[in-house]
Length: 68
Image (cartoon, rainbow, N blue to C red; front, side, top):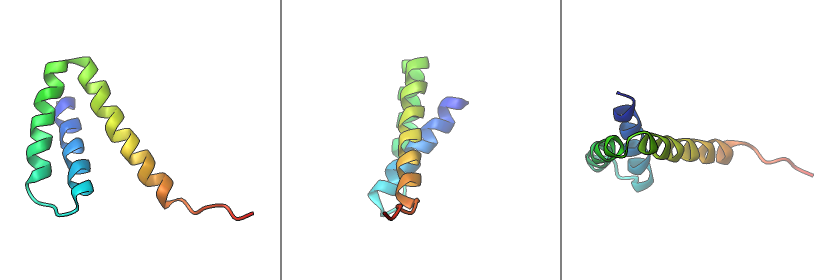
């Protein structure tokens, strides 16, 4: 179940990067979930790390910069 959730999040991130929306992210997310399951715990770590990095970068980009 966790692998499917991470696969969906990976698909969403890929779809956001593409910018056009549609089924591309869903298909890639479905394929990513299958690949993550085959890799076992390492796949969950890699997929979760990818999603966490993208979320961190997005949050960092939204943060206002400090003025000196």
